Image (cartoon, rainbow, N blue to C red; front, top):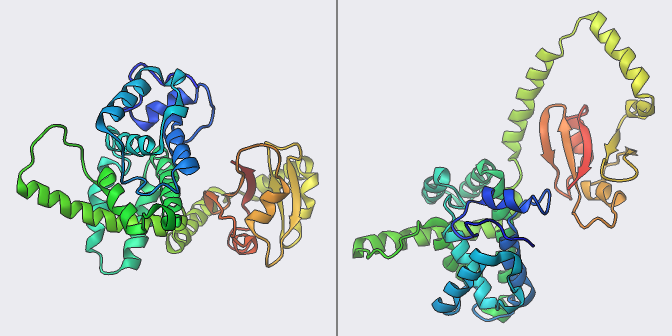
Length: 337
């Protein structure tokens, strides 16, 4: 790795870190330093009792922070212990100039506690997560994956779902106060925010798999709006349609099979076999398609629904493709990371 930038890594925006990282690793979606800290915790911290709760000594954290800020490219990661990584991870999140949940949406997140049911809270969390900037959403996703792994090893590390939520919530939902003494009223308010945040984080950890998907009711509305818009744009006269048909016949002879019911053509530009015609059945999933294009590439591949009555949507691995085909028969199918 190379140094991130002269300004270090703590207190630097996610976009700035990614801009620097991408000069060395094109397409990276989560800052390198954040990935490194998560990796240490996953590899050696999941069985450590009190992981995430215990953060090591303040003096050592201060030293490690200074070293990371000054020489990330030559930093010795092998010297970082699990408790060090835990403390640095929380420090990194707390000191982001734009909170991970963003200034724009943070108060809205906290207001979800006032919703009448847990189901409504989960639905609202789903919508709010989709509104986050891409860099924040990707970083949050990786964090939640780690937190779920910590909880899954609670028999060893003694960190239950509620323990993890209580420990991590202040880093996500409370603003940083450096060196300021707080009144008892302010401390009480912050405790209330921490508890509310812990409840929300508990839901985010438990239901993280659906946070990144567009709710069904909203997806239906988006499809309907796009359908109306597409019909207006594609109201061609007979001459234009005839010319368009001739062009399609000339340039897409290999796509005749798409005229058959339930046959799709999947494009995979990163692979040697760049496209493949596939007959759908009632059980075929997105995972079945991506498996056909698996290679030695370390990047995880996903199937995307593109165009038709949607802009672009990454399909869940267990998504039944025939259902998607029926509601959006004119979309393109694309395999990419």
